[in-house]
Picture 1 (cartoon, rainbow, N blue to C red):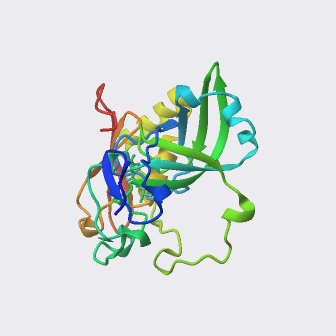
Picture 2 (tube, protein in one colour):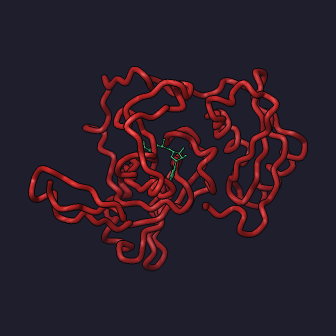
Picture 3 (cartoon, helix red, strand yellow):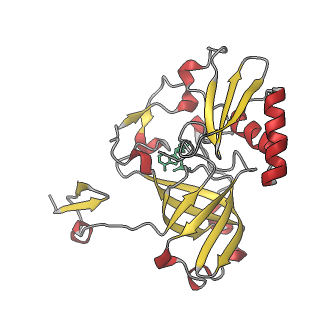
Length: 263
Ligand SMILES: C[S@@+](CC[C@H](N)C(=O)[O-])C[C@H]1O[C@@H](n2cnc3c(N)ncnc32)[C@H](O)[C@@H]1O
């Protein structure tokens, strides 16, 4: 058994290559600023709520025009990040992916579960722009699946000639699953969306529709069509329910100061 290696605060033991027994310690290069203030409701993969823009804020040590030179020529980038809310939650070799209805188990390495031996995630996202304000570099990206405050370990260009694998297959997740239901907004919700459009220039109704069509409900609660759920999006509390006939946005309220912070 080799010497313990540390990733985060947890020791990892290797039995193999001597070079791998050196301590692994990593430091985030950036932090995500996103509309997602809690894990519930975040799309389960990137590219599903493309009307929502998140910002990758480079940390001072890495925030220079040199470090991102050439990145503006990429349409998409890979984000390697830490599932920061799961770091101390442990992992199990078998997990129940929501897409399998919550009752079938797959090996953790056959899933994208956040609960992994090393809680590292990987998301390709559309790069809208590289923004440089003084020394501060921001990357505006579209369709990310990341909680506000997520630490980014690395940023890499997406390479179309190599990263697109046209004949790739994965039998248990072979297509996007979105609810094909109309989204209805109450009068109160419509007024709030119109106000948000005027004050923020963003189509909140489109953002909410995209999120809810991903069906954030836990697999085992999908038959309970009377249940009202809430998601925190931006600084808003959005209340909704899903029935066999449609998706109903009941109310949108502004959260009080501090309530919209990612926990
Ligand atoms: C299933 S994971 C997939 C992430 C990534 N695309 C991947 O495949 O590695 C996406 C989910 O991770 C959760 N998530 C996002 N940011 C997180 C964070 N910082 N800590 C813990 N969980 C997070 C959200 O609930 C989101 O729906």
